[in-house]
Image (cartoon, rainbow, N blue to C red; front, side, top):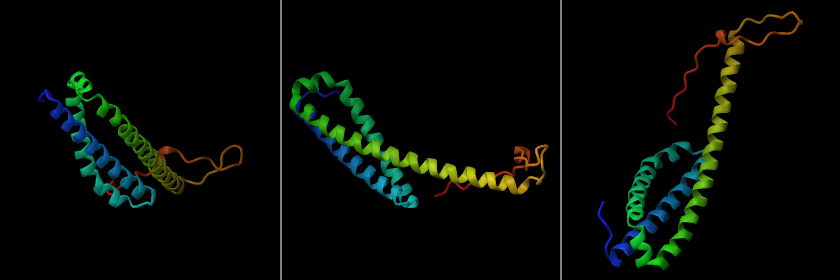
Length: 150
């Protein structure tokens, strides 16, 4: 990791960070919309680009952290302006995470319901001591294979 020693280097690093924030924000918004509309295959195609941007963001942020004292002294006004961009990215990321969590919960619910229905069909239909049907035992359940390909 190369140290930042000049004001120009600090400004370039902050410009790079601003560009990464904008790119990642745009990509996350696109992914959010695709997942929200149920276009999971297209959303999955975004993952390699998102991973690359996130890796670059991590590397650059580590460099900026290591040189934070100098950057704050050299270009304090740019640092203050960057907080707004960071807040915007955070808002987009929060929405993205909420949509992904919802999609995950829905798909998990579908798989659980399907598994339960299959277990009911596989279990013998018997009546218990109360005269009501007995819930199927987990030992009668058949394995459920799920393809992780979207």
